[in-house]
Length: 209
Image 1 (tube, helix red, strand yellow):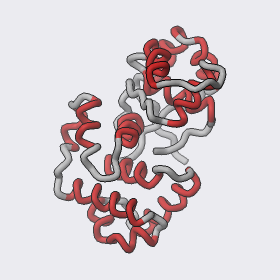
Image 2 (cartoon, one colour):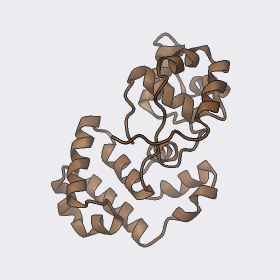
Image 3 (tube, rainbow, N blue to C red):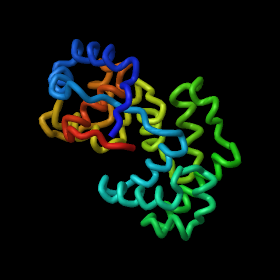
Image 4 (tube, one colour):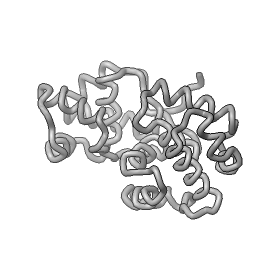
């Protein structure tokens, strides 16, 4: 599998985080040759995120493989032409099939300002994305991290991040969003990078969103 270049800020972020946070320094040292990799086009990345919601990584990969067989380039128009019946035949629930089709419609009719996203603040992109059915804040944040390579996203609702902070900083005790924000205050402006390494502390193999 071809490897992509890490984001241009990656090494700078690693050095800064390792200096500020001993826990992260240890995790970063343990994973020296892997980094966040860019995903595909916006529609491809968002559709994949919807497919992966609330199911196992293995199940999501299986459904995605069948979706790619149905719509090989995963273009919005191809997905619309497949119809809900075709999408359900890939293993998607009826509701998720509707979500993927609705996303495709937003791209086809250009109701999302995709070309302007690169110049928009994180919260502005999130506000636009959550207007699409099936995309909540978590999916929008995953898109910012994996699709747009934004460096300073802190996905407080992410179960993996919650667990990693609990285990690495609170000896397994429950944590509140406020406690997570306190720990993460030292990570800015590289909170996406810190999150990615904390995920690695749970699972060394990067998951694709």
